Length: 198
Image (cartoon, rainbow, N blue to C red; front, side, top):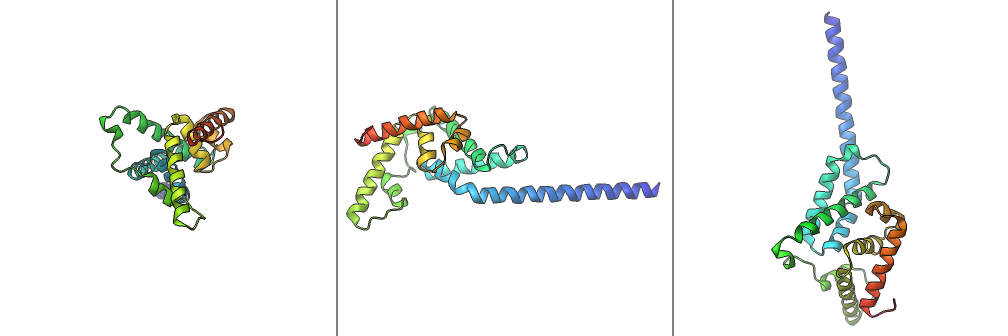
């Protein structure tokens, strides 16, 4: 009888040790995913919202949601695609909720075009060339603001995050042909707004 109790105690201890190791491994794996993909998620959300504080908040929400559901991640897509899908959904939820709020147009913490122009790498050396580049960035941001939500998302994923069309399709849940159509329309609208060729 005592041998059965000792054996059962050993089995429970072994099972607990295995469970702790699995939890530690999953935690380390998720920490690596966060470290590797956080900058891209933040950059996408910043480009989408043009608000540093909001982008930071949505980035944290994205990784919190991902952490809660890490055990159910099936690996059918890359972790980046999965995280981007979460970020896109959080962004959509934010704008949907924000439309109902009175202070929607308050831009107290928004990033201005001049500041965004400074973040972009520039090979120009003269102050005049840098000012022209900032003005161009400002016009592009204005044009991007006028895009539909879907066109803006596809445009930002392609040209800010430099994602492939197939990855954008997986992240947005659209077919690749639909992504191409939205991207083409978005580029056409941005070019038209900038006074270029369609």
